[in-house]
Amino acid sequence: MTDSIFGIFSNEKKLIGTAFAFNRNETGLYLLTCNHVVDGKDSLFIGSGKACQVIKQLPDCDLAILITEDTNCPILPLKPLSDIKYAYVEGFANYMGGTKKEKISNIKIKTGVDLSIRGINTKAYSLETNEPITEGYSGSPTICEYTHQVFGVVSIKHSDTKNYS
Image (cartoon, rainbow, N blue to C red; front, side, top):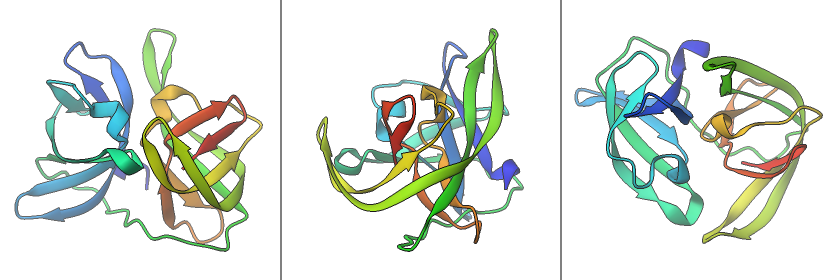
């Protein structure tokens, strides 16, 4: 799963978020991230240094689809789930002048949250954790602890211990 999760960098080589591979075809590899991560950015790169571009923005639900040249990695399809108690996220964060990829586990999930904030109007999952999910994690897959199925995308930070997906 780890090989399918990428840091997204701006043209200044600054980490701006996380994306994950959710589809591929003859055109390339499709990545899913948050719209707020890529909105208004001119040049984008994934961690391997490959350029990627935004092909669709969905601001109402804070999602964006990127495309890059194909990378040999597994696909992480996104499927909504309803009976989830615990999840984990895997993403990138700025760390001591560089970046690190890290998994945060044992996240309590609340389903069916009506979210209406900063122009985003959607159903969401509430993520409650003892460990902060920092801004580089925006766009990270939210993964069920039991089935290992991706069911959401980390989007909005409410506090150090509460986020939305």
